[in-house]
Length: 238
Image (cartoon, rainbow, N blue to C red; front, top):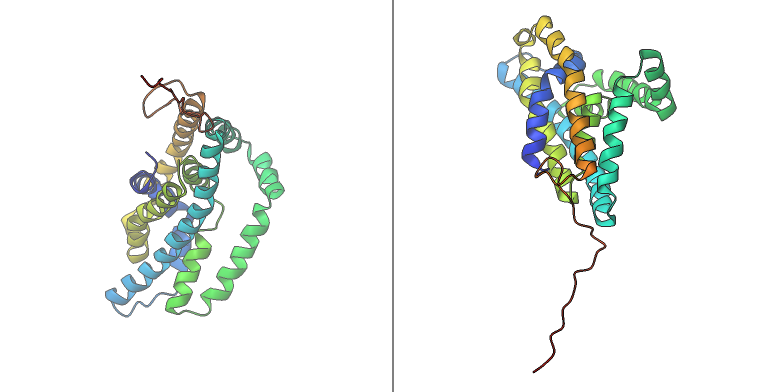
């Protein structure tokens, strides 16, 4: 069932990856270091911004997910997403960079970097939230996987809850990193990075199985055709 808890667990498991990718951003924010309470406040504001962005992404993906479900294309979408994850995730570095430029992701990254540069020189509570929101827009393979899961929700609400839960799941580790960067060693981060390809293959496999509709409960359910009208039986009046 795609919803808050599925997203939270996904975010929690992937939070080590988030530390490796975005930890440097969290540590570069000019937070108030005068007291531990002020530092925690600023770190919470920054992470709140990330959760807001993931929730907004969930609104969009949840809408498409509900549309695909109602139109009967959800299983095809699941199958195609599974294949796409395998292709994109394992593209060689040069082809991956070309693919990113073709999608316009390099322009998005440049825009976000300029936004970071402008905001970092204007520290304030609102700034920390905005930095977090921009951070949530950074191209990231793990966010793509979370989004791909959200788009398979049967309803818009399910997609929103999944992405909100995903953001909340990443908060504990990112919060800990902002408060004390020594909690997670570089060795641990590199170990987690090595696990990412296996997680990608696992998720892609689950998507493909869901798309095949083999009738396996929870893994590959046979979804009913939403366009199929229920049969109406008329009994003659005696």
